[in-house]
Image (cartoon, rainbow, N blue to C red; front, side, top):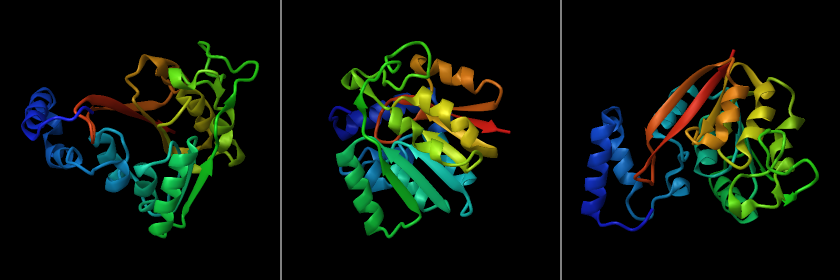
Length: 231
């Protein structure tokens, strides 16, 4: 987010909340996240909509097992609420930062996995199908996230109460995640308003969906986080 004065931020917030009155209950938490020195890691919350954070706070229980694609503040948040968290990250530098924070907080219930992208192999090139492991973002052109996506494959089907997809190659992640969710558990997809993730909706079309659109911490924009119950 570009630097803005406090008054400009408040005006922008007011304009957004007028359009999204249901999010007024998050106004204080939103303002706090926009203050200097706040980030997903310092605040220890996921970078998803506030509605999705609220849902996670109500859904997660101490006996649950969670898998997430994309480490960060969400990893710290989940580790404090679930029995076991498995988190896979593609960026080695960020992986080290999260690992140090987990160690400092003595969060021993989290398995943090590093799976760096590699050069594209035959069949990995971007296409309309989700079986490839390429990211649509330009900075990752020529790279495959196959090992990253397949990190969940080593776990038996029905292993997790929640699989959160908020990293790279998200449609492929959703494809590999569905069978790993326990009956009654959920798949969560962040930024689900993006047209690039339309195939994820198709893959999950048989399941009940809830869209949570609205304000997001550390940002003056609005996005969507969606969940599907695998029942």
